[in-house]
Length: 326
Image 1 (tube, rainbow, N blue to C red):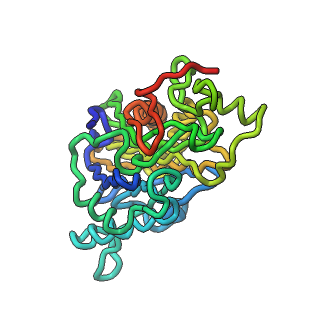
Image 2 (cartoon, one colour):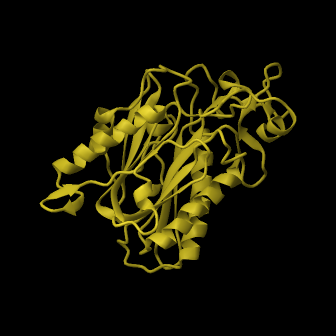
């Protein structure tokens, strides 16, 4: 299901996805081949990432040509190799002497708990996703990096709910656009940002009602889910922002996540957000407004990710079952 108001509304950004519905894994590539200034904020205690150190302060390289979001746990980081090959074949990358080296950071989520535990997106999947990238609204739900995503695991994977990937965008005063794409594989619940009602979460083994992850973690013994959770995403804008300003945008993305994922940033999650500026609007927008918009689009994209998901891997989805909160 494609979505309007998505990250591809940001000029200079295209998205491609590779999806394996048989083995329930995949990857999503956010392409900006002509370069986008980039930053990252890693908040979770169990991240799986690649090329994030070069996005820190004081680093030589300021721009990236793509960001990869992938399933497959650490194995899925191999998808970035295919994106690098795709970009090399087309002459994109950071100039070093007579060659160009594509800069492609990546983050992964653990989706080996459903589908085929030995399946993961490899370099060929990354190349395929990059080759399919376009400025058409990306499909959301159980596709790309969200193919094997699951939320609400405090009672174990068998009591969880299927999740996926979502995207959203906002055009702010002054003309700049802010968009996000997020793959949601959280330990906790996804809740309504307005009411706090659980939209997708752990299901009670007897009543099948939603069980608050926060209450379960505080007052009971949760199931062991070490290293099997993560929410990963990209926020992009066409406004002109430097790396320091983008660091604040990436931080605000996590604020948006914390509004709708409860709890967020646990020791068992690898929550990571990248922030990109293509600068194509030539607008020097208020960085505070960009950050606030980033928080909004991330929250919207996360809710969409669970509401667009469908039952897979023996798990129900939020749109197929609406249990009460116990």
